[in-house]
Length: 200
Image 1 (cartoon, helix red, strand yellow):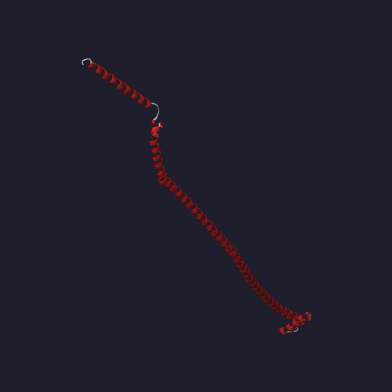
Image 2 (spheres, rainbow, N blue to C red):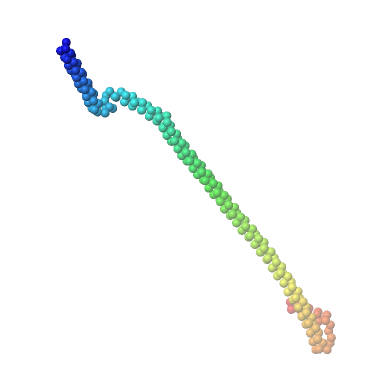
């Protein structure tokens, strides 16, 4: 019995050593497998990676479809609306400017036409006033000439009367001196009148 006990101990030790060596071999084999490459390239991890890929893609799609794309579309629409409003305002301002330019041109044309009419009217009025003043001046000069001629005729008649009186007195004195007879002024006047009629 004493001899069997050491044998049993040796057998147990041998079994334990074999088991330890087997565990060491499995650990070494497992460690060698882990050091064979990255986990994402191992097929046993592909299922989880595909699930995460779909989850990330779904999240990105939802973010793009619900957040980023609507915001970009809204920004684009706002920008397009702003540009359209600016273009419409520019066209409106241009149309208003053209209308104001046409109105100003019409006012200028009307002012020119009115100025021409006023110039023609002023010219005609000036010509009429000139003709009226010229006629009045001619009439005034004619009246002065008539008055001067009347004065001249009066002075001439007065001078002729004086000359006739002087001539009568001279003739009366000469007749009286030559003939010794006195003649009257009436006789001298009658003789001068007859002489003037005979000369005529």
